Amino acid sequence: EAQVTQNPRYLITVTGKKLTVTCSQNMNHEYMSWYRQDPGLGLRQIYYSMNVEVTDKGDVPEGYKVSRKEKRNFPLILESPSPNQTSLYFCASRSRGGQFTEAFFGQGTRLTVV
Amino acid sequence: ILNVEQSPQSLHVQEGDSTNFTCSFPSSNFYALHWYRWETAKSPEALFVMTLNGDEKKKGRISATLNTKEGYSYLYIKGSQPEDSATYLCAFGAKSEKLVFGKGTKLTVNP
Image (cartoon, rainbow over all chains, first blue to last red; front, side, top):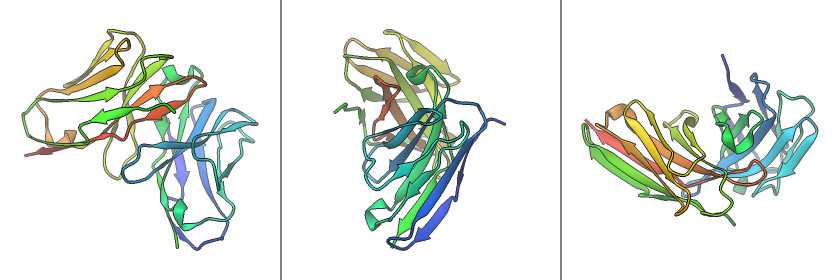
């Protein structure tokens, strides 16, 4: 089954404690991205990757890091989480063809930073 | 900064009603317009990807139209059912593979 898998689904952590949210897709997609969803705001792009070892900032990259060492995986790293990073996070992937192909989303990770 | 507007923000209809909502986007540098359906506690799922001015797409009771010259798209649901309750997101396909999402229209269909 084609899918994007995120882990964990829920996470409560303390300020400053490094964490990683994993994202893996089994569709051999080139393009992967991370979004955050906050009340009253649309999905905002954090980082994206057009292929292995190619990553770039989205609209709200501050406080986040990513890596793309393998095509299937695109982890999101919060080196020193802060309460303003409390949010619902989605990973998504698309095949080559960019805007013309639909995005497949992971199940979401609800992160709370206290 | 690209701006994608969706209206209304929320909508309550009765089962059996037909409804529609709007997505407005920049009319220049257009690549594609996406519609997604997002049910509570699930992940967004693609409904349509539209690329040509005048495009009309249909999936069951849901259809969408696209006007790239004036920068809007309509999503129509015919004979709404409670299982249609969800947030409907549109996304503008911009340069460099980016998708810019609107804030969504939250639809509630009352039995």
